[in-house]
Amino acid sequence: MQGYWVRPMSASSPDSSQDLATLLAENAALRERNELLTAVIRHCPAVIFVKDTEGRLRVCNRTYERLAGAEPGGLLGKTDHDIFGPEAGEQNRRNDLAVCESGAPQEVEELIPQPDGVHVYLSVKFPIYDARGRLYGLGGIATDISERRRAEEERNALQQQIIAVQRSVLDELSTPIVPIADNVIALPLIGTIDRERGRAIMQALLDGVAEHRARAAILDVTGVRSIDAQVAAGLLQSVRAARLLGTRVLVTGIRPEVAQAMVGLDADWRGVEIFATMREAVAGVLGRGPARG
Image 1 (tube, rainbow, N blue to C red):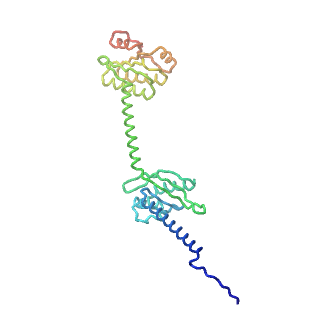
Image 2 (cartoon, rainbow, N blue to C red):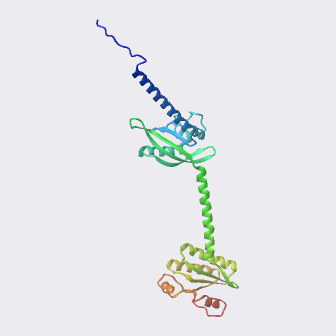
Image 3 (tube, rainbow, N blue to C red):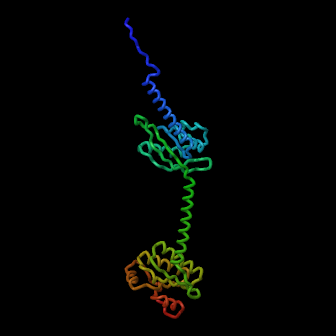
């Protein structure tokens, strides 16, 4: 039997020492990166999580556990349905599947129940693939934006209140009631009249009639830029509404071009007292001039 001499590799061989040193350095760097990543996940104030394709939690930080009222490690293996109930669970699962199917990160808002009520979370979710390129699941970072949302809602509500006050002031300015004699009021109109302002005009006229117990009201349209069918119908409606209250309504300031345009409109002005000027209308109301219709 022929034997062979094998030279054992010395532990002090330059090649083996270098390989061992490289391996130890790589392990130390890997351990350092792992510790750093663990520290980031642990101390991040935002919610951080990783789920598999079935929606089970594989990684989550302490922030996630605190909002769910769980002990460290107590959520691993559970789904959102287990943790937050069917409604939030379905919502989150639907969003997760959309991310996995699209293969791209997505930003979504999710409503999450907590002991003090429902919170709004802004979640950035992204697919995670293994070393072979196969879908492992998804990761996510979620931030509680409930306070921001409440502040936005309060700011929007305040803005709407300001707009409403401004609109009220503008309505008063655009539909001013001017008492010109005992139980006689005038409503001078300027600018453009749309449907909304038409309703404001009628309301201002009726309010003015009631407040001043007006027996006559003069509607002056000298400053109205144009009158179309919609405006004409609105003015007629205002006139008829005031007349139902027993108030005599006079319309003044219809310029020739406006009168010509009104001829072709489908509006019945019969029975409406029309005067060229405010002076003539005042004289007619006070009995110093003939009524016209």
